[in-house]
Image 1: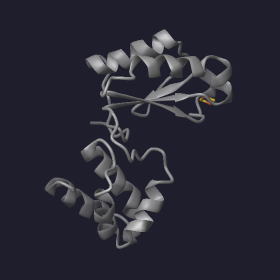
Image 2: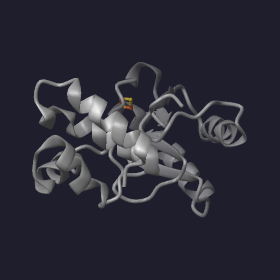
Image 3: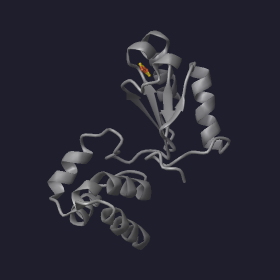
Length: 161
Ligand code: FES
C-alpha cells in the first residue's frame, strides 16, 4: 500500500523510536496522507513495520477519530456542537454545511466534540486548521475559500503539504 517513497519514510520514522511499536500512529498518519483516508489494507502493513499484530494497529486507529476509516473528501470540516458552541450556533452551522455539501465529494462535514476553542465559539476546523466566531454564512465562505484555493488546505491529517 505504501509507495516506495513512503516505505522509505516509514523505515526512517520507525528508526526514530526506541521501540518500533511507538510508530503506529505516525505510520497511520503517513498512510492517511498518502490515500486521503486510512484504508483497511494499510493496517497489516503498518503492523509489519511496527512488529505488532494487525489487531493492535486496528485497536489504536479505531480509538482516534482523526483516523478516517472511510473515504472522505479532500476537505474535512469538523464542526463543534459541544456545550459552548451549542448555545451560540454550532448546530445551525453544522446543519447549514451538511445541507450545502451533501452531494459534494470534495467536502466531508463531521460533528465533533469540544475543539478547545470555546473562548471564540462557535468553532470549526478545516483539515485541523481552526476557524472561530462563525456564523453559517461565514463558515460556508471559509469552506468555499479552501475549495477555490484562496486558503491553503493541509492534508486530511493536518500535515502541511
Ligand atoms: S465547545 Fe466548541 S470549542 Fe469548546
